[in-house]
Length: 187
Image 1 (cartoon, rainbow, N blue to C red):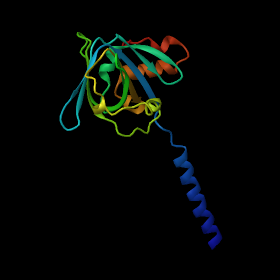
Image 2 (cartoon, one colour):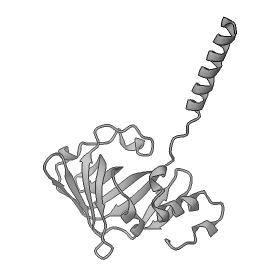
Image 3 (cartoon, one colour):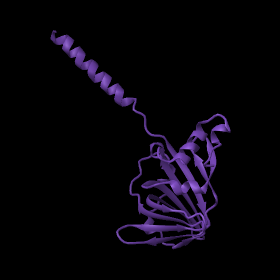
Image 4 (cartoon, rainbow, N blue to C red):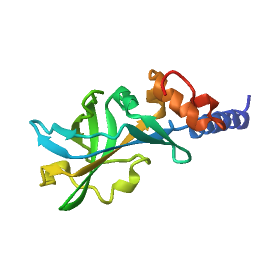
């Protein structure tokens, strides 16, 4: 084998390797919007903060950017952390947006109070919450302790849903052309 053939095989190997890397697909991202009433921010130690949102509306908005669904808020209980989210606080003093990383989430069905244990998200490089990046304030700089209305936009990565049959069913429903895929034991 001469030197030109060897160079050709090496170039072919590099070309195939790079082509394989470039067609790697990023995991799909979904947004779940939950709306609530009055909320409060409780700053704890070591940068951990609790956000408590009362009067959660019983349905959440689920979207893949193309199609939208209303899902029962009970499916929000099955979201496991860490999850990135944008929280929009509204009150008499105006509106404040904060990007957070949720480490723990609690939504007991009986009292409709959502409790989030969060850390501030210093840098966000995803796509689903990109529209909130320009408006964001650091969570510890928000001075009002209580807000009248609160909206939470959860960024859900598709591969994280493999162990969550109910949310996976909702994703199948978004992708379906007919609503037969939406009829199941979760909804």
